[in-house]
Image (cartoon, rainbow, N blue to C red; front, side):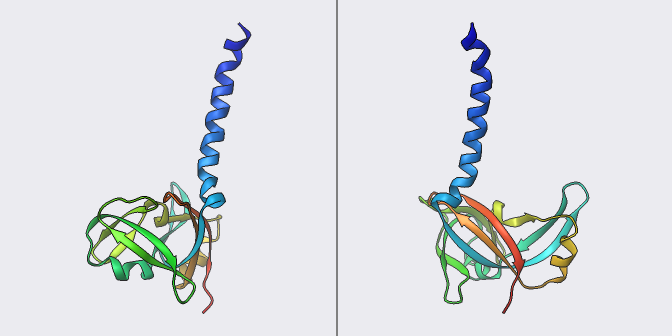
Length: 150
């Protein structure tokens, strides 16, 4: 009888721990990259302040692809991440994204939620940098966003 009382709370706690571990595992086991970013929409009345981002360094190589793409990153000569490998077919370690026109993005890279009041400041900044952790299996965890100093 005692086991039945504790089984559901233990399972629920275990589930939450697994979700948290999956989220932070990108930082524990992955590599960290910094991307050049440009903002284009910093506020939503329902979700709060966030910054919609586009990444000029990722767009250059993706122009020959359309639709779902899979890519990996590497550190470029200026210290910012660039595409290392891109394919229309999935492969291990690839970040799942999509390309349309001359834009390349991944769902985890599109929006970056910021503290209340920080959105207008980031909107006026043209040059931003985003730091992300990428797990060896392709999961992305956004870490920070800041104005870029060049």
